[in-house]
Image (cartoon, rainbow, N blue to C red; front, top):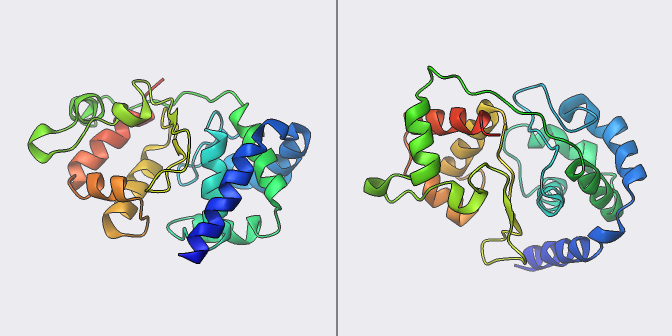
Length: 209
């Protein structure tokens, strides 16, 4: 509980200082530390690494602190840990603000990969399984939405999903299913989806613009 409280204080501090971000420093960090995985402008071309361009800065701050503090260890987060270990709170804030300011590049869904099911889940959910629509939190075009403050589940923003790599979305939903990621809302939703449904909605999200 103490650790979570300390993390919350760091996050709130980062949010309050967001307007003071040094974009030049953020660009330097992106070009030297983040570039190999996320690309200098945040438009990662490697499917296992998420696109950060246009992502909510508060969400990037939150997730980077979770990785730095060993509270998020799924997938490639483990390899990211030593890369962010030396970053100060200001560095993380600056890099997050820089990536937020970058223009995201659109992805493309595979029209043969169950696009209709993916659209149904994203736009309307699955009533019979009590799965809400993805757009209710992430927006009709996947642009994401700020949550405004630290919520009971630790949500400070609903992240941008538009154009995100299908394989990355799939991995995150699977991580929520198996408990590697612990946001209560997403765990509940992911555990109601089967593999075919996850594959379909991830493909649809990749093509959102």
